[in-house]
Image 1: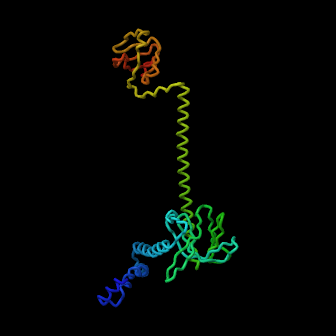
Image 2: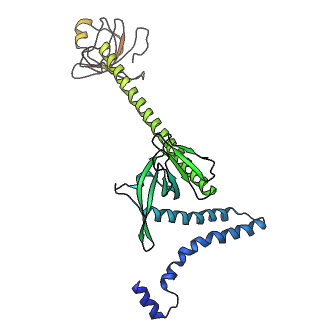
Image 3: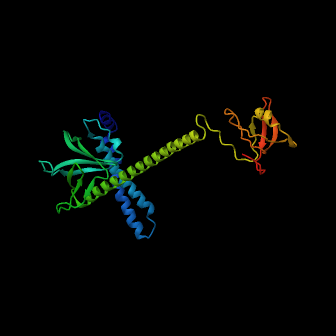
Length: 314
């Protein structure tokens, strides 16, 4: 302030510089009036007013948001509450509040803040020199259990909030302001209920998926135990008819005396089961034909097997 005074005296400015700094803020409240006049005359000329209407809505919101931010900054709590966890501030203002269930039922002026999921009540405390703050008193979570009563005791400006713990009567300064409060409350409650429903649905779907996976694991384990007690089952063979399978024929050659029936083909004369540690082996039956594709150095044959009817075995 002393700097501004020195600058003012240096240049001989009649109007205090502090007054000039407040001009942009004062103009904010004048822009809606200017745009309303523009809308009025534009409509009379039957011209499109879409952009003007959007501009008017935007400039009318600026003072509201500015006022909300200023009042929220003045809200204090000894509990060290973080207001941001209650979501965005939707609406705030002064209401006369009473709670008939208590012994003291007289109305008290309270500054009320509607957040996305909570309504907060505070008391205004004067600090002197046109300064004040808001002292937190209590809050109510805006859940599906909160009931907004629009008409109360035949008083046009009164409405109420009913919960399992509170019966709060509220009185606005006019019917229009009362309707704005009711609209903001119902919007916040509806949004919170929808978000909670989405969250619960997501949790339910997650549990179902988790339970399904556990159930499938249990079924698979039971099937393994039934099919191959005490050892892991043989992995499923690929379904392609051209798949090559490894079999160990060291034992079968000693007992089957394979005879070639065509180039690279042999007929099985004794049933054969692969060893337990050979996860790529296949079972062979008497009179089944195998085509030898490769002889491995360790004594195993790389074959393609067919059933007795001539179909390729997978």
